[in-house]
Amino acid sequence: MAIAPPPPPLLLIQSLTLPLLFLLFLLPPLQSHFATSPTIELPNNPTTTISVADYGAVGDGLRYDTIAIQSAIDSCPSPSPCRVTFPAGLTYLTATIRLKSGVVLDIQEGATLLGGPRLEDYPKEQSKWYVVLAENAINVGISGGGVVDGQGLKFVTRFDERKNVMVSWNWTGACLGDECRPRLVGFINCRNVKLSNLKLRQPAYWCLHIVQCENIFIEDVSIYGDFNTPNNDGIDIEDSNNTVITRCHIDTGDDAICPKTYTGPLYNLTVTNCWIRSKSSAIKLGSASWFNFKGLVFNNITIVDSHRGLGLQIRDGGNVSDITFSNINIRTRYYDQSWWGRAEPIYVTTCPRHSKSKEGSISNLLFVNITSTSENGVFLSGSKGGLLRDLRFINLDLTYRRWTSDAGGLVDYRPGCQGLVKHSMAGIIMEHINGLVIDNVNMRWSDDPLRQWNDPLDFRSATVNNISLLNFHPTLYKQ
Image 1 (cartoon, rainbow, N blue to C red):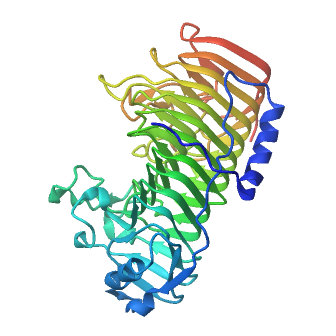
Image 2 (cartoon, one colour):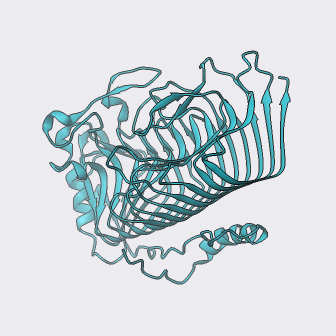
Image 3 (cartoon, helix red, strand yellow):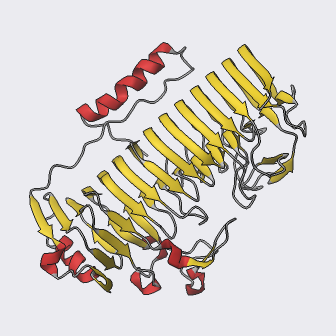
């Protein structure tokens, strides 16, 4: 897929880029250049303003306002800039609404756009099941300080503190399995997408889905999904390029920020100044990984009480290169085993999903200025045909201690691969690696009465080569 050259840089994007460039300038170079923040061509300020109230929206949360909302959108003089406003203090119940080029939804603070919970509220084609959907559009977005709510709890058939059991509309034949529910907001094959000053609440399935888009800017977005609900991912970025996510607060049951590649590569993603909690992975590349990931930067992020901190799950033959994780504070803990993850602060894996899958490679990863407190260690695992190459860990402070009742002692290769495997705990477990630098890393583990923390480093020399240890300080401490 050819990637068009970026437009001229904007001042805001430059302000995000300069600290990252300064940090990377101070570090020794890797074999190829790391990513810098992409430039984003933002939509122009809308010149036309239209209120959904003028088209008959009542906003009582009981009667559907779909026709009124869609009529307001359709009346915009596309592709000219147009703002469609939702007056404050009201709740607008709707089936799927569709944006078009030039339209920005202005959901004012105190207003809620409420997704319908019925199958008939969504198109026949399952891939179009969204409360808000934009396809093949330019200069589109959502802002205003209000809420988009998917009523996710209405899709729970049995509440369970370990993991809720959810409704599945698979009986319709529109989709298979137990993940057959509507997403909240989707942008498909769009260019110049901006979401700002927005609250996304209670998705029944994925919350914000970006598919095959170019130039995406997401700032000051708050995402909340029920902590016990599976598959309510925060932001899924799929086959999309030139994306900035900044100043976001994401609290979800499933993966919080999740780049994926299904039909094409994913380049130039910058995530900065975010707070994350997840019962699965706070940040996860994959597991859908048929094409390459390149040029990703994650900087100044706080991760709390998550099942996994920074994760790479490469399972389908795509290659990952030139990724930076910097200035990140992580706290991970055990949750129920039905959720992927085993409290790893850092998890880097590549292995074939099944016997017919290809093996992808991971190379040129930089972890710098990372602090973590976790119930389990770092897991680095390549495969015979998909080695991990040229990884650097610089200025890390790792603290290991136990505070939940989980027995531990398992390595999690899911999805596919070997599944859950019994393995003693270690500070860093390494498999199938060629090229690893550990520089100025402090590792502390508690005086565990079960003596589970015996090994700072666990690896087999037959599969791990070219390791450099500089100022590595493992030590025991008493709680």
